[in-house]
Image 1: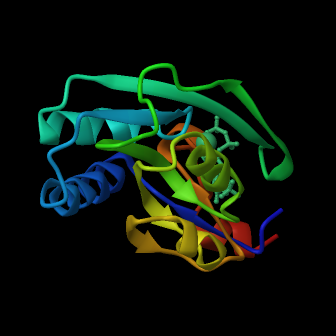
Image 2: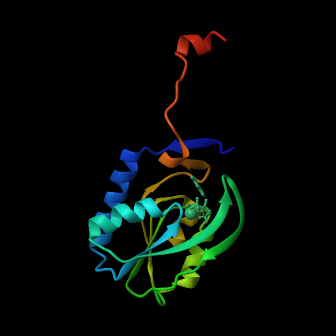
Length: 158
Ligand SMILES: O=P(O)(O)OC[C@H]1O[C@H](OP(=O)(O)OP(=O)(O)O)[C@H](O)[C@@H]1O
Ligand SMILES: Nc1nc2[nH]cnc2c(=O)[nH]1
Ligand SMILES: [Mg+2]
């Protein structure tokens, strides 16, 4: 378990993804977007809408089993983006930078952007919006659901 968690709501993810879209607008135009599945899919959909980009490629890179990092596995390489020239790669976050280094090897000329970044991954990302500390685990809206929590007086009495 990570020492601390940072919970991101749907609203916040939408707002932060739109903030990233504003930053990327001035770096475009883009030939297309490469979404890194699965985490990059929702930010990619939001940003594609804002940038009016209809061409979406996907790359599947599996690096984690929940909080446990393993050997990254490219389950689906890109087929449509050449060497990445003019393409924008999107992922939800960069943590150690392992996934980012692989995608950079596959598409060396592309621009790599994430919504969230941790310090170890910052050097491999071109544009990001919000930084969180390395010992924080980001909980995305799809990782959580609202649930009943006992009143403080009840839980403190135990
Ligand atoms: O910088 P890194 O240390 O490589 O970590 C970042 C990657 O880890 C997560 O993907 P994950 O492997 O959990 O797969 P998923 O997107 O399918 O959930 C996240 O979506 C990034 O792609
Ligand atoms: N959900 C989630 N996936 C990750 N993969 C690598 N780091 C993280 C993180 O902080 N949160
Ligand atoms: Mg991922």
